[in-house]
Length: 367
Image 1: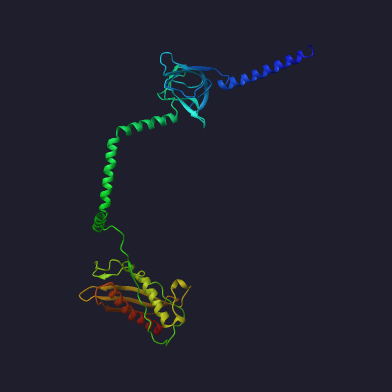
Image 2 (image 1 turned 180 degrees about the vertical axis):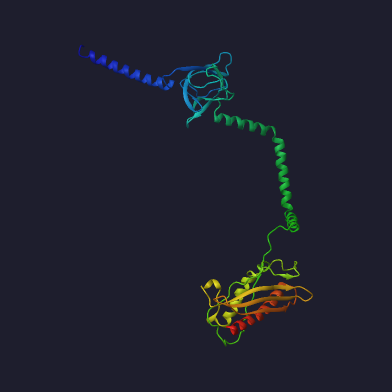
């Protein structure tokens, strides 16, 4: 007995120490610290599902204390009275809002305090009144909302049924008159100028091919830069004199702007004459020996009593030093059979063919 007695005393002391340590940790965790505390009474109107003594008290999301008491009000069974102990430094004021929050996936309830706008001293209030429904969880709130929606639908079942029936009648009427509605919409589009844009029709010039044998080759490297022209001629549209809209030409375009189109077809003309010594664009080489500079003066349809395609160009040959070697004006006209796009393009082809051939012969003879 004397041998076992000290061990029993030691074992009891160790167990008591362990219990004391766990108790201290539990107390420290629930009280949130060792500082001074202030107790407030909280009244909840309604249920507080899951709230327990020891639950955390948060102020603006920061833990400041815990719930110390929880019970039903004797005079009102729907009311729940609680006591919370928070750090004395917590700025609880008369307008502090009280509610329940459910944290985590399991929805652990905590008492949530939210600061108001009161700037007076703290501790001036001992009882806090929670807002109605403060203890209601999100699930319960959703159930209540659905219950109210169901009640509204039940009260208005007749009018809703009539509305759905009217919508069905309206949709059936639309289905029966789809063709008429399409016609009305199409008419409105035509009247307002809407709808899909009209397809553009593009025309090109044709370079002359029957230029005869190569009697004289072009000496040196010739370049034909893009012709110059006034802004009115920098367009793909067919131009008219007098300038106005002519039926059938609103959706007609040249394949490129007039200066670029003339440059391309003049180069084609020289290539058709002598491909081995054909000119290049100025951008295709560094410094050419000679440049054929073209200025577009006219490229239009004269829509007077007799419609004609009218082309007027000025040409100048300039060497690499900028010296003018030769210059000349070229003009060609061709009657248009009918003022239609196809006939106008045919007239331009004939006028340009003669003009391009004249420029070719003049250039070859001048070099």
